[in-house]
Length: 471
Image 1 (cartoon, one colour):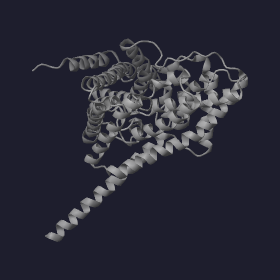
Image 2 (tube, rainbow, N blue to C red):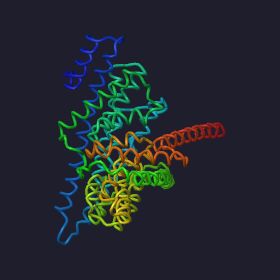
Image 3 (cartoon, rainbow, N blue to C red):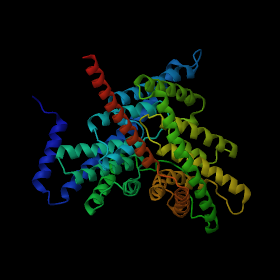
């Protein structure tokens, strides 16, 4: 019987670790984190290329069979509908925890509240995410990358049989590697774990170094597969005038209010979908088929309100839209982002949130330039600050938002306006009683799980009673 090559490599690596390092040393955890970072980078790179491939195949089918007597939308609608419907089916059938971004599931796992079933989550999240994002839905690739990386971390923990504390560190290391690779942003990946998962992360020098090593290795691998350029190509701005910082603070206050309403709308949208499908598979898949058809049409008629929104950011920052167009796009993309993310499709909300922040930031910058043309000379700078503002208000992770935008756009001289905007957004959101979106999503998931368990217990009791009465 031949042993598969991947198992030979894993067993060989395990023997190497066991021979040269002992459990008394932190070296084991560091080496495993390096290995996890490499695997997370490979998974993220394959996922990224897979999304591009799925989109190209969809366009090839549309262009091959559409045009002339058959309009393009007549082909785009069924193709996207089938892709999204398949994503919804495999998610509900094989790994329901792979739905959505997956980040609340990872936070729950770090607290010991949610299981990590990596054997089924990894393939479902990978292929389900490809189909959902490739269909044109307004979702981001960062959520799947984070969940894939974290599940790879748990896979390595199980293979090497590390203890509970080290397994949690490797789970966090995988999540950091996934986010770092998704956005080519190692510092943001590290800070996301330290800041967003601060209540779950077991802080120690070794666990923190593990997160660092995984994020660095994942970024290196991702850059080997792609390139070292920034994810988003925008104007490189110089240090803004200090007198304009007050405008960035006002922009942050606006995002604080918007972020609270956006989080509430996400939860309301999820409740709406739950009331429709009631966790019945055929209804859940029907929602996927319908959304795929809608976004298939949008990719033909209005692509700016479909997809993740990352490709829209340079156009918005470059001034291709007037104030009216920016406002309309902001409203429409808010609607499509809520429809996509709230549905439970395997995809993230980071990228759509960054696009929304860019739209509102640019709209604010255009308005400020109109009122104060001598003081505000570059409205696009507010678009860059806006990218981090809405993220900070919704996720409640301002430092991560600052680093994420700087690394994604290479606008290092925008750090001061970004700090002012993100901190202003966080202060207002906290003052008004808002809660981080992933904390709310985790609480909602746990409540639904408890409700389902109670319902199952009640059903079993009823069956026993009915069985006894028949006898």
